[in-house]
Length: 342
Figure 1 (cartoon, rainbow, N blue to C red):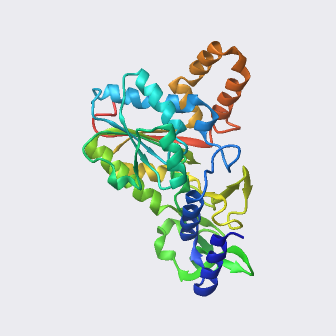
Figure 2: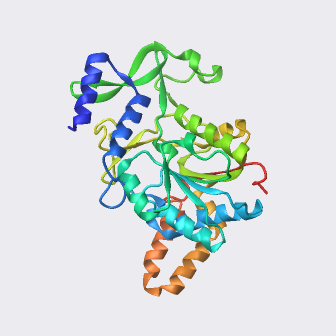
Figure 3: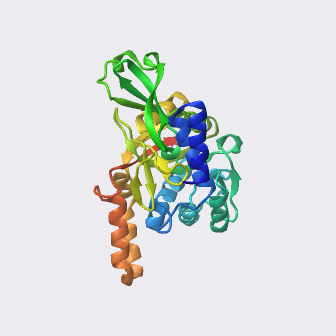
């Protein structure tokens, strides 16, 4: 057991169960502050690590939005949770080929990942959150596998009514339990009559950050692309999951030692952006998005330039767009500010 896991068990033993959202937030804060989780030696691989084509396509989309908005010379590139800086490097290279060379701003809280990002993109400026980003310049935003790591709140229907889902102790094991406090009033009336055992997730942290992003796009201008795994229709059930050494594990078994995520509710994010006066350009599967942006033509060009890499490039393309891989599970939400949607 880790020191963090021990301290968490002591907290629960002394004060009682904690909400799933608190468990997820604190566990991930410890996790990301203490390691580089990416790559074969880490716990998971993201699309930018699969192929340069992913970042290039996203960068070209932002460059196209920028040109259609009149190519303002003060637009800045912003990335939420930039990993090792791989996506930014690829996107910025594609933007430069299109005549766009923006200042770079990263929203990143992990000191370990900041070091890797500074090496990959030396000119980047760092922010702990969105609130300190410049407020007088258009934003060109990418958030890839960022929102899924923000904490979700879970409500579970019990025989006695709706309760918040908590994390408690069974011996030394962390287990999900239902709180004693009634939560029926927190649900809309049409969802209160669900079967016992039904779990509903909400994501206040995701909504808060999307509200900030949407407001900034509406007032400052710009465009944003949120890419993550999730769903674009009403959903019930727990989507909380944990990855450790590229394997799914019990999300409560290794606090602070595994990557905790939950599926993103893209409809909720879109509704939040609209309420903040941003424009929603659409929600697409990763496969449809990348194909529309020309990833297959880019793969052909890379293969023509390096025939020895044909199998590698074809395999990466398949991983990014195949329905059996990342193609349909991952979605993209496309947003724009006024004057950036045409």
